[in-house]
Structure formats: C-alpha cells, structure tokens
Length: 113
Length: 114
Image 1 (cartoon, each protein chain N blue to C red):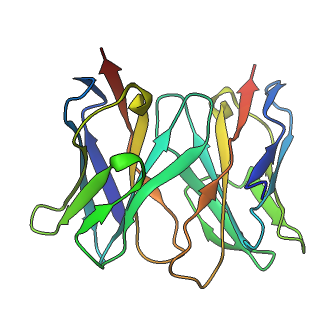
Image 2 (cartoon, rainbow over the protein chains, first blue to last red):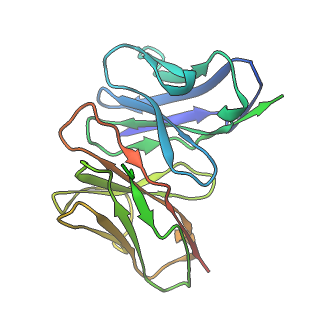
C-alpha cells in the first residue's frame, strides 16, 4: 500500500521568497511520485513526476522536487514565489505505471506582497 | 484538443436520489479513472476503467458504479445519495501502456446533496 503525508496544510510566503512544500511517502514498492496544483474551481494540473529516473525532477512554472529515498521525501521547491503560484498543491504516489493515485491532504500556498 | 471534459459542472440532488456524471477523455486516451474530492481533502480514488471493464477499485461502496463506452467515455453513477456524497468528482484519463503519459484531469463536477 502507498500513502503520502503533506506537512503543513497552509504555507504563506512573500513574493520572491523560496517556496518549500513538504511531502513524505510510504510505499511497499518503488514509488512513482507526483505533485499536482489545483486552482480554485479547477481540476488538477501535473507540475512534475518522479518515475525512478533522475532524483531531481524539474517541472513546469519553475518548480522542482528531489526524491530522497533515505528520507522517504519528495519536497517541492521554487526559488522565487510569484503571486500566480497561490493555489492548493497535492503530493501523490502510485505503485506503478497506470496504477491509482493516492493523494495527500494538500497544502494551500498563499503568496503575499 | 479539448482535454478531459466533464458534465455537468454543478448539480444539486436530494438524499436518496441517484445521479450520473459523465466524462469524455482526452483525445487518444483509453483509460478513465474517477476520484472524489471532499471539501478540504485530497482526491480519493473511486475506480478505473479500461477496455470497458472496471480494472481497479478504491474503498467505495457498491452504491458507486461506473461504465465505459466503446468511444472510451465514461459514466459514474451514485445511487441512494447521502449528504456525505457531496464533493467534487474528478475524472482523469490516460493512455494505457505508455510509461511516459501522464493522467489529465477534468475540471470536475461539483455535486451537492441536500
């Protein structure tokens, strides 16, 4: 079985500051890991995914995440926050290609001037 | 490319009623999954359809059922609605057998049970 834990349901940063959203996973098999973003009244958009290739994954909109097996973590970062980054972010895990996604409870990111 | 389209976008139902939600997958995709997202929660997997058969199922009661048509579109049916079924229902599609394809999500159907 797979699960993810997102630490911090709400994160607030200043525009231009580093964004760090935390995700820890649990998986009985080598995991596939994902970060999705959800804007109000919208579906989910994939930011990036880890599928056992490079441990540092670059995604859209300047986001990246690093897979650390020793820490069972897959934290999402962005060097400089923009107002348009304000949204809810979900970490998800699956047990393999085509398998169901198991999501965390989400982190609401607020970006302040 | 229209992406994943879901209908309706919103609906209100009464307890005990039945509801059908619809999903058209992205062009070229043949696998459809349904998720339930309660307010303030992450999406929860309901089931996945491929080749018109349910392939995986999450921890949802039999009141939740689905169907996939030959054109790959899908329906989610919920019988005997409870207040707790109020949620955003998301459909996701992908191409089976291709390691590099991601799941694309629709904008969802907001179901309110009163």
